[in-house]
Every structure is written in C-alpha cells, then in structure tokens.
Amino acid sequence: QFRTTHRRAQMWISNLEDHHAKALRHKNNWKHLFSSFRKPVVSLVNSWPFKLVQATLILANFFVNVVEYQIVPVPGTATADLFSWLDYIFTGIFALELVIQMIANWFIPFWMDAWNVLDFAVISVSLVLIGVIGETTFLKAI
Image (tube, rainbow, N blue to C red; front, side, top):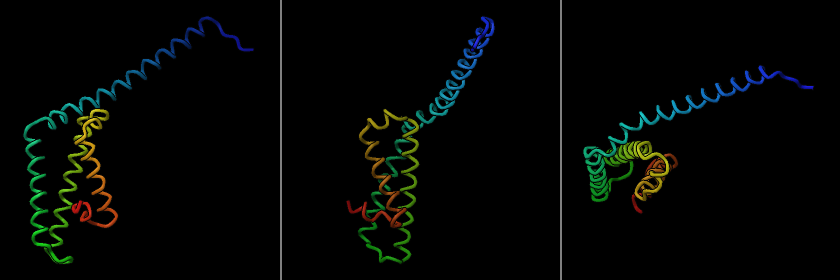
C-alpha cells in the first residue's frame, strides 16, 4: 500500500511546479530567440532595397530567358552551358529569397498570400526539375 506524508506530498508538488516553471521559461526562451532572429529578417523583407533587388532579379531572369529563346543555343555548346548555369544561379537566388520570405512571414501569413504560394510552387518545381533532369526547360515553356 502506498502511503505518503503531507510534507512529502508538498515536496512533490513543489518539484512539479518548479519543473513546470523551468519548462515554460525554456519554451519562452526559444520563442524569444526565434522572434529576435525574425525581427531583422522582417525588416529586410519589408525594405525597399530588398524589393528593388527582387524586381531587378525577376527582370534580369526574364531578359536572360528572352535572349536564350532568341539565340536558341545548340545543346552542348558553351552558350547553352552558360544559359544553364544562369538558370541554376537564378533558381538558387529565388530559392534563397523564398526561404527568407518564409522566415519573415512565418507559417500562416506566408501561406495566406497567393504570391507566396505561387512562388513556392514555381521554385519547388524548378528545384525538382533540376534535381531530376538537370534543367528547367520544361518549366520555362509553361
């Protein structure tokens, strides 16, 4: 049969309360750490220089694609390789920008913005195509 004294029960309760308080502090420390990391990222994403760089990269990628389709480089040539590498570079930059947007907007706000969902879909498909077939030519045709 289990017996305990009132003093021993109070010690158990006190220990449980201490552990609960420590767990809450630990949880809040992580929340504070993430929040303090996120604040400068939010400031960066909302700044006009960041938006200007985004727009410039989108236009640069567009013009590179226009030039590529005007030239129509022969596969295996240095020109075709250059356009492939430019495609990899732009995809990498846009993937990094997507991660920055995800951190800045966190979960629900990120997915509530249709542009972010479209961005996520395009970048995901691009990364999969690069991983599977080594290029995103199919995606460019769409």
